[in-house]
Image (cartoon, rainbow, N blue to C red):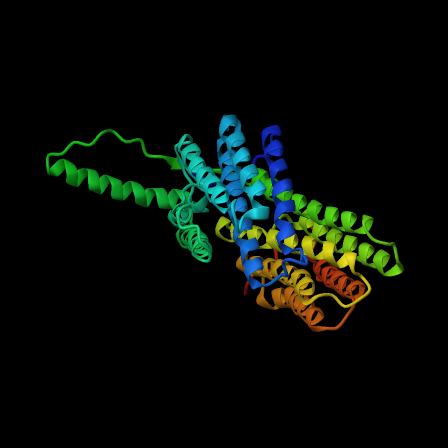
Length: 400
């Protein structure tokens, strides 16, 4: 029995409606990385952004994978209830370090428990990304509802996220193989119980979950488009609020071109933005989180840059832009290598796209110059596969 179905299937109206709340959530999260007179961007706010982003992303992922497996049997009420839960999380973001932090934690725990319960209705076992089906890191989040004083709450959230990622990565694998091992252990336990004269109630073993590959690729790609849409909105909104100078026009054009580059990579290669096939969920899922978080950071950086395109940028804004770009292209390179691309090809493709933004971050360029430099970096990612003959969605060069 295969874990992957190859037939074409598209996002339903319910799933598209579900995605609308992500548009709002990403917009709320991007504001965490906006420097204000009251709050500068430092390491604490970056970590806060990543933690909150992961929480919302993980809920979306759990229900997206559930709907992928359930297909037409997807429970509408569960999806709509999760949508409301994400709405509460998004509304809590502006005051998450204060009065609304408890509401965020409660909504997150509720959504993850709802996901686990909803997955149970499918009677399937998905080993590709265990976090989608169980709440491995929920206990620290539950504790944080009462231990709400900083920094205790933030440490608990971080521990919960680390457990979620670590357990999902280490225990991920082929669903059928894992289910066979679980079945074997269950049968051995049942036989021992019967040998002792104990009877156990009948238990129906789950079946291996079968993902629809085309549908999942579409869903992950749509999430990327949502985040890119937030970046476009940041550029448009910032441009509408300042005087239109030549530096602003250059910055806006280059920023839009940068976003087109990310869009082109997604259109051409899928959510991984790497010209490879057969990427396992244990790589695809954390990679998707890292890359979309990088784009969200770039969105916040572009909004701040367009507002001040002529002078030297604040270090926080500069590194929000450059750091997001580094994370995006570094992750795509790791995905390409994990899918079997030659190390030489991967380094030639991704290393300049990682070193370039780092060098730009250290340079004293004005805002418009910085965004042009990032556009050149994105251009390298777009053109290098075409120069080397790796175009469309082909298999990357096989490892020797």
